[in-house]
Amino acid sequence: MIGRLRGEIVIKQPPMLLLDVNGVGYEVEAPMSTFYNLPEQGKQVTLFTHLVVRDDAHILFGFHDESERLLFRTLLKVNGVGAKMALAILSGMSADEFAYCVQSDDTSALVRLPGIGKKTAERLIVEMRDRLDKLQAVSAATIPSSQATADVAASSPVADAVSALVALGYKPNDASRMVRNVDTTDLGSEEIIRTALQSVTAKS
Image 1: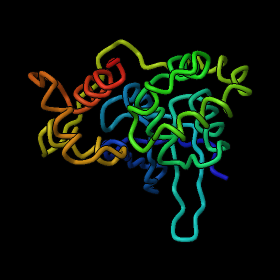
Image 2: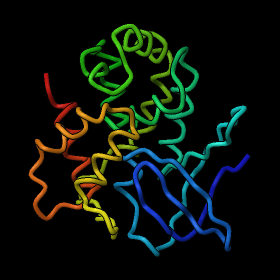
Image 3: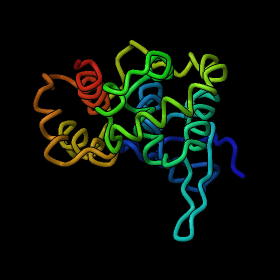
């Protein structure tokens, strides 16, 4: 099991990272809560990782700290929740916000996340309620208020943001609409994604 990686960021294309670890390139998928904490390309970063082994692929997921990884692993234990859905939850709300949804039986906030219907939201609340003691130790996984570092990429930040939202599970039309509702002036792709996700979770 690969539990941690330290290397140079070669590519930042949410939700995918490419890390150069002593000459070996590791493709890592990460939630937006991790992307908001990353340095710019070319810098060193340490990620806590979780390896998912499937018949057709081995997928490595990376997290800014151990508390994020704990929440990810806890979500995977819920019936019907896979890695993609767990990644979408971590991208769409902080650990504290998720814990609040569970405590307050707030299914409406959960169903606004991609891939989560009412039945799945209800199951998340029921099954995660028993695990809240662990979740309350995950407060370090909240999204920081400082502005995220913009990627240096050939494509535009707007296009990168739409692509990232689609990769997180949103339909292309919904992803485009979410980005159109953001004032993207002088914003990098990660800040556009964060603002778009916050606007979705803030709706009542």
